[in-house]
Length: 254
Image (cartoon, rainbow, N blue to C red; front, side):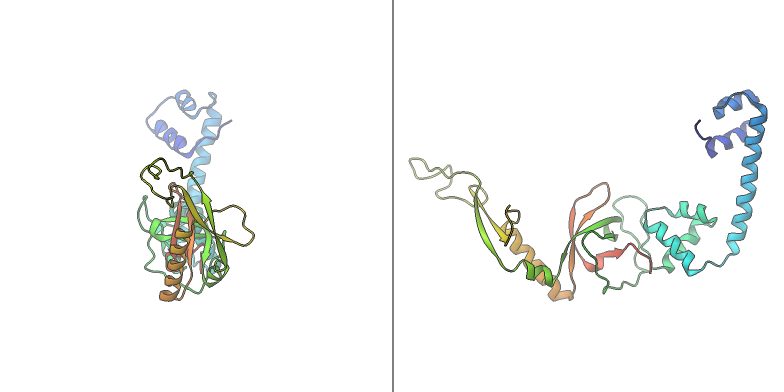
């Protein structure tokens, strides 16, 4: 049997006040006509309301420990909303937000394509992320996964390799010596050049793109002294992004 929602019970309470018949109220709740059961459902509802009211009163005066604030922050960083957490702890959403800011946690923006609130956070940029680690991408207001770490080790690992020529479309000159508009094989049409590392079999890294990426990684390290990352967005949009370290936040309260 399906559980009767709180909203339906609240509507039933209104129907009682409006002097609706108990039969119609039972039908609204989706139960067989049974006045005793109906009375018990309503009584249990009011008892729960009183318990929660008392718990909220006690929680409003409670001094939360750092461990409890940490748990609240962890719930939020796992994706729960401030309202859901507030209900769980019998406190207001405003107090939840206060705890989150105390715990150095990014505040997600309401709505898509809005930047998260992070101006209250003091970043420890010495914290490095590993491949596969879950992070928060503030500028896109979403979680993301680290797919690549661009640092000195990445540069070293990709330094020694070799170029591989791969024909993509045969160059067949006609009587004029040209193939269409081309007098000789054209890169990007008739062939591609890839940068291969020792042990690799399938070409996946186009040389031009690799050289641009290597230059970009080197420049970021030179200018900031820090690594950058390739991340995959875990939201409705998805997709890869290259971002600097300061744009990412740990999914862990500090």
